Length: 117
Length: 110
Image (cartoon, rainbow over all chains, first blue to last red; front, side):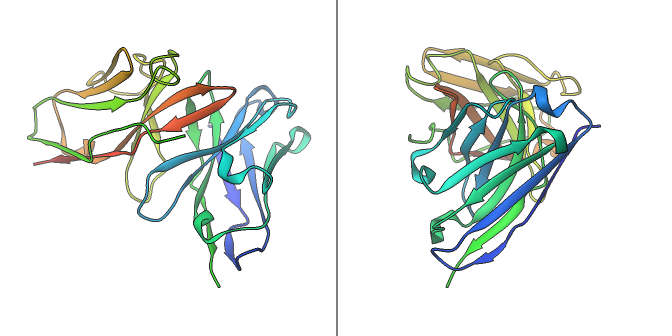
């Protein structure tokens, strides 16, 4: 059974930093690209970033470029999201998601990030 | 990137069919075959119901079907059931390993 389990969410002040982790199980992690997708309270889903199976290729939406960094440790089946210089508008539930060929086939339950003073 | 345009809400009676539209541009919906649809119920993780524009993942009811014409994709739910009540999102590939979601459509079963 494919499982994706996020951790590391919490309350952060504007300008602060936080790192989310996502532990994967039930599939060969190092053969799948991954993404982080978020949902702000009362809003829709928003794709945030992508990382290739090897970790060599990444892509980000403009609003997080230079502030967010995605990485992965394939030896530990773990995906990371380092978030710096956080803004109030980054408040959201962040989903760790497995990518198929141009779609997202398995989602974690999400980790809640609240950015507030 | 602007969100793909979806109607805010669609409703139908049990047994009826409904269709949700997803309007994009030639740079996303119209430019690639990678259009997918997700069902999202409160408190649960989203579920993939359509990928590649028209394909259903294993375990998804054949009451769900997808199509595309030009820059607009559509999701049809036939034989509407109470369990289909959820928010539905389309998503399209927009090049360079980037994706854009639709604004979401709340489906209500009357």
